[in-house]
Image (cartoon, rainbow, N blue to C red):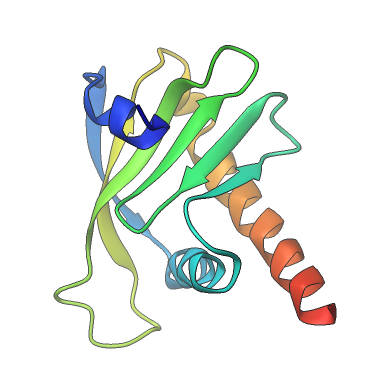
Length: 124
């Protein structure tokens, strides 16, 4: 069973409504197009955490503990988005009791890691 499918079967502790800045959302979509999917990205500032990206969900897992789900961004609402400059609403599912502590920095780290990977890909 795939990691993204397994997380769909896990009940989150809490579900929040969130808005993702256009820069972060667009960078993930570009990386999925250029680097393939699902795409697994390490978050260097968060020891052991990785994000598994697909078009429907961005799942942050603890790679040191059998890919235990930590949090996930999903249900991206792009239907009302009229331009690439507009933010995207989504759900943020918290699977771990301390997930709220890293939700902002994890997204920033993800965006930075993807920018670096996309730059490296462009050089090749």
